[in-house]
Image (cartoon, rainbow, N blue to C red):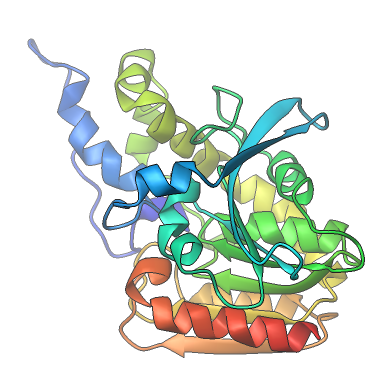
Length: 292
């Protein structure tokens, strides 16, 4: 994930504080930097999705209420869909309205987004993983985890911490390599009080997550060798937000995984759940097979 800038992209000019300067001067330039996982379109199924909404409470490492959407077959293995940053559960609308077969599908609003608490950012992968772990299926039916973008390290943390309860993992355009992370100077501007208020909760929290991501990934790195579940990696060659080099990093680090399968999509960009849905559904189906 590199602060959402391709390496060869020239940084925008620094904001000027001349007379008449307003925080909105940099707002337009800042939004793309923290919009790493925002889908290219919004769901039209909002009313129907709200009928699927449920909540769960977690107590540690922070106390918060987690909001999630649930569809599919209730007695089947659970599939948990984890969005990136920013985002919310409704971004998985197509997978909830037409659930993959033979699965109990859950999509959550990650902590700090959507209808989940708290109001502020929760950059800790440990805390984000705790919210996902609270939604894992019963021990006799281990869950399949799907993480897109920053959701990738979140599901990796869950799989490392709960190897007996995770049946398979699918990484979609996932950011795991800390050496590929970059913070753009304008992201620091996003922490200034006048600009932070203009960003609103969603983008403000996304910016905080991205600025803290590199050290979080460094702490996660040694835990990747604890993932035993089979893994399917899907990444596009035209992803300018999370570089393809993350695939090689995962392949090296997942030394204990039962199997690691990789699908590289030519010319596919970062928005795989929406622009490469058939490949994503194929990856989920493959994960289900590998989990048996």
